[in-house]
Length: 508
Image (cartoon, rainbow, N blue to C red; front, side, top):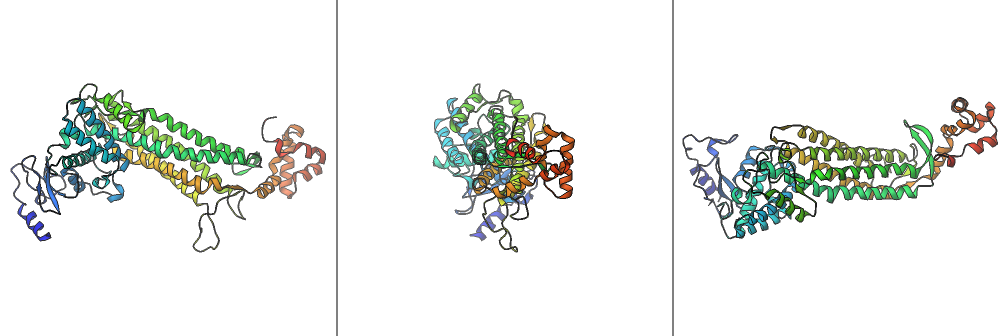
């Protein structure tokens, strides 16, 4: 069979028609000559078929629904391998969009048989049933044109198959004329970007953060009566409760969710209907509004048509804004992870105020060692999200004239951040936060030894005398009480009356 294929390929290495040129990056001998439109030929039953695009003919695997433009992209953009493929949420979002467009186009006169076949095939894309047919990487044209055509070709060929036609024939369902009807890559890709981002935020990111918020809130209440020493500049400060300390983390996560939700109205605005430059060329009046309404119905999210399609194509400020909110969330989670890992440091030579869950062995050489691995994972995720935001920021700042051409890179990083933050929040909650215990013996010891309890004496003896007590006690290695009495500033009874940690937890 392989010999036959080689012979067949050799026989088709014909002289190119006058004036024809090889596709950029392709050897002329490897490109098959142009054939009449609507001509798909099977090279062998189990190998490949021949499809064409405007540059010529190419071999397409028989077991794939994509066509010539997808194959050409795999030849021209061999960058990164399978790990750099277009994120599946973008592909699924395209399935939703193409279904919605077909349904609206049917209302405007598209043959119902063709429209229904497109809708069925698009549903399979949206459901993830055809994921193996999307091989393209993120690093392609900055408008995402190759991925839009990958989707068009897959839906076209799957619809043709459903209707009993021949794969690659483009009959009766054409990838451009029917699947891409009233659309351009310039408006479909940003539409898919917004759909994918919104779905990821609602299905992964916000639920993960809510879970973390609730667990931290429960711990804040559990630790409400445990008084401990505070720390500023990493040095001893005045007391607070462990519950108060955790309440700060609760508020940070609450604000993170608030910030993310605040960005969503701009994410809900869809570019569909803007076509090539935002004018809506080759669409019908009302097409944009109807597509947005269909997408909203399919996803259950409040999508609307973008009020200005020129902005929707040329700038992606909404995604930069969402990424910025996630960047702020990463800052919050980094602080929370670091606090908890340091408060749990030890078990004998660190702060040791928290006892963290022991999930796995921590060292390949030190027996019995256990590490704060969930804190480490969360802090690494936070660092990655901060890096992603830099890329998104650069991409968003580079919209040129009527089109931003950093689209694939931007959505890859936005989706990556949303998924990492949502997953990490759940992992940190389930494997760390819910199992945190307070080491009250250690907390009490450190609090009672702290020199900053002297702050309670300020209203009674003044700042200068209180400072003298603290510095002298520290120098001599003695207690505040003994030093204060020795200096003659107050009696033992007065010290006991005035220095009470439980009375230092808020305004009087």
